[in-house]
Structure formats: structure tokens, C-alpha cells
Length: 383
Image (cartoon, rainbow, N blue to C red):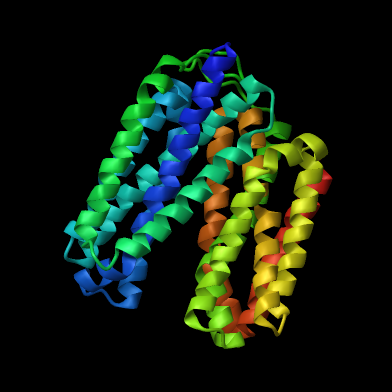
């Protein structure tokens, strides 16, 4: 890891840009899913199966990426995955069947999952080199990139075809990757958490370290469960249960995402003041209270406030969990925590749907509060 302040600052800006690019590209793809559905003549069920390709590709690749980062260094792996992500986002508009769509989404998901492990591993090393808890700022960049990507995607959806839009995302992604490549390749040095060369054999982890990595992975899972649930069910709750207008219903997730971005942007200062354990405890408790308010309140404005409070509470839990797992076990720890976290994001939407069918959607959404409370308890007992 480079020693000078200027070099570290340059590396921080570079990694931040890649986080923002990842969120921007992924959100740009998400807003074109309805167009791709129409193009492939997919039913809702068939589209759901095709979209599982993203999840399957990500989960399969995450563990492998951790090993590649240990062998080759996280910076080269980050560049390879960023390139693959940028190229693969242009593929869905070229498909004309559900099977073909599922296949290209498997590739896209593999690149997305690999990039998330690789640049989180690079970020963990930088956090250790700087000696400051700056991990939330990287995730704030991802959230901000996602908001910009979704907003611009919505604006151009009426004037640009999916093919041209996603091809533009490819060009932007490749440009960002090309600009960041010299800095990443120049400063790929011994990993900060081990002090060993990147191709050194991984140290053998004791049972306590493995348990702690799983603990932080569970915190990531509880957090990502809430993110997935809010993305898929928040607007429906406002529209169906509170009779909000379509525009106001759409604002529900915007309130959540904006609050999460703000929370992550201020996360470094919070971590420096409170420390990791108390930040997790405070965040989990805040998110639990906010989600109870958002899911059970009978007034739209109170629900929107609850969603915002939930976003503030959840904001720093995932970054802290990934950073601590990486500090303990290097890229393998990042891969484990990321895989568990991604599993939570996958589990959230269908679990909410199942619970809503059994009880009601407001009652089902309280499961987000339950898991946020669980993250708080885990943080308290593992500190």
C-alpha cells in the first residue's frame, strides 16, 4: 500500500469512483427491466426466473473472487470485474428469449458479485492504511451512483431505446475503468491486513476468527434484508395500504435511499465518535424503530418519515460488517460477509411476500424491524 498522503488520497478517489460507477450501472439496468420484459415476451414468472441469473451469478462468483484477490491482489481483480460488468450490461437488450436473457444475466451477476468483493477488499486495505473508518463513504458513493443512475435512466427511458441506453452505460463504465486503472495497478502492493504479498498462501484462520466473520456476515444479512424489502415492497405498501398517489408511493424508496446515502456520507464521523460496536447498536435500534413507524403508521407522511429513519439506521451496518470481516480474514472475509449480505437481499422480497400472504403487508414489513433489532443484539454481544 502506498505510503504518501497524496498517493493514499488518489487511491481513495479512485476506489470511490468505482463504487459510484457500480451503483450507476446497476441502477441503469434495473430501470430498463420492464422494457426487456416486453422485448422477450416474458411472463412475470418467467422474468423472475431469468432475474435469478443475476443473483445466482453473484453468489457463485463471490467466494471465487475472494480467492482470486488473495492470489493476484484485489486491484487487478477489481479492474477485470469492472470491465466485465461494463461489457455485460449491454447484453440484455440483445436477447429475444427468456433463456437467453437468463444466460446473459448470469454473466452480468457474476461480474457484479465479483466486483463487489474485489473493490470492498481494496477498500478494506485502504481503511487499514489510512487508519480511519472511511468504509461508509465508499458505500455512500455506491448509493449516490445508484440514485443518479435510476434518475437519469427514468429521464431517458422515453427517448432512448434499451439498446442505446445500456450501450451508453457500457461506454461510461469502460471509461471509468480505464481512468482508474493506472492508479490501481500502480499501487497494488502487499495487503494491509496481513502484510504478506498478494500471492502468499492464506493464513489458517482459527475457529474464533471464523465465527466472528460469520457474525459480521449475519449483520450484513440483516441489513441487506431490509434494503431488498424496501426496494420491492415499500411503494406497494404506500399505494395499497395508505392509498397514496403513484408519485408519492414512488417517493417512499427515494426517502429511504436518500437517507441511507446521507447516513453513509456522515458515517466516518459517526464511527470516529462512537466506535464500531456502538454504531451498529445505534443503527440497528434506529432502523427497528423507523421500520415499525413506517410499516404500522396510518398516515402517509409518517410512513415516509419512518422509511427515512430506517435508511439512516441501516446506512452504516453493511459497510461496518464488511470492513470488520475483511480486517479479520482478508478477501475471504469480505467474500463471506458479502455472500451472506447478498443472501439477505435475496431473502427479503420473497419472505415479505410470503408473510404478507399469511398476515398482511404492514405486518410482514415489521420483519425488517425484527432483523434490524437482531443486528443490534449481534453488535452488542460481539463487541
